[in-house]
Image (spheres, rainbow, N blue to C red):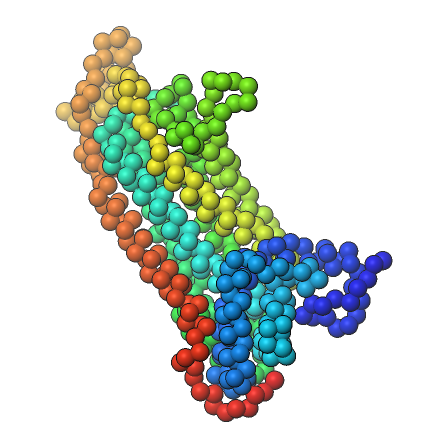
Length: 465
């Protein structure tokens, strides 16, 4: 049994089986590269708070913050390699601090646990992620809005059961996905609100026996409040990640249908749309083929998002309160979903930007039978019971003497005659405004945290440890 003395934060000088070490470390050296910039920000706020309450000399606090400021660009660029012997990014960051400022770097762990350190880094990452993903969705929604505006009046069959059903329009098709994305964007303030509680200072889940200032840590990191119940800082880790994953799965429910429609409507049998050449691929054997691989893979990625949400739920459910090592396994599905979603939103925006409408094929598909329900409704509006009108139109269709009114278009909200695109644009602008406001706050955070100005005076230079 190969053994080594570990260099982890929790090491007590006892040997550790290497196979067990590899098993417990898992994917952390790779996954934590995404967390490190946020761990750096959290550590800067922690060092500053410790200095301001007198648990750390201001000179030491400022040395730590300067060192973290120097490390931050490297962490954003993912240049710091996490040695598996160090177990995770949190140990690697502390080791980098010790290398930079000597024994002062070891003082960064005063009054905190790796438990609240990782929860805080995740919380900071999640705040940034929903803003970034929100931006991606806004851009995709704007592409759909422009597409709907360009083709608002272009006729298109409406389908149910994959059969032509009633008259519709390209604009009505596009605005369906636009409105769906606005609805998903409307959920972001609620997600932000549940993330807007700072877990710093909760330590292992029971607080620390030192006079720290959790409210100050929250203020420095741009949170509006503290997550008061320290045990819930650990209990809530699964809830918050699951809420984001479930939101992404909900977004995917709409985008999967968009991908499906792009595949169907751009196929030869339909031919209403033409995908941009850059969004199609060829066959290795058939010279005639251009395949909608992007839309098909997008459809598959949506289903992958459902699976990641379910994987996280299975890992993180069924546990008692407080911290358990199972939590480590919840990072992979969360980070995978965040990365995958950002790419998916961007790719679909590019497809919509280049999507062409084949008006001749769409017009040719507008057969008279599509207007049967319109005609039955007209008869019913003039006084005939609808069931009688239904039977009369059905008989006319069977006899081949049905005459459709191709020019009629209802003008109520949502009908093909009134898509309310102006209203949708206003709502989309409001969503974008909320996102931009929070993006600006998050963008300003590193400079504010790494500044050596505006530090509060410690009540006494006790330098406790």
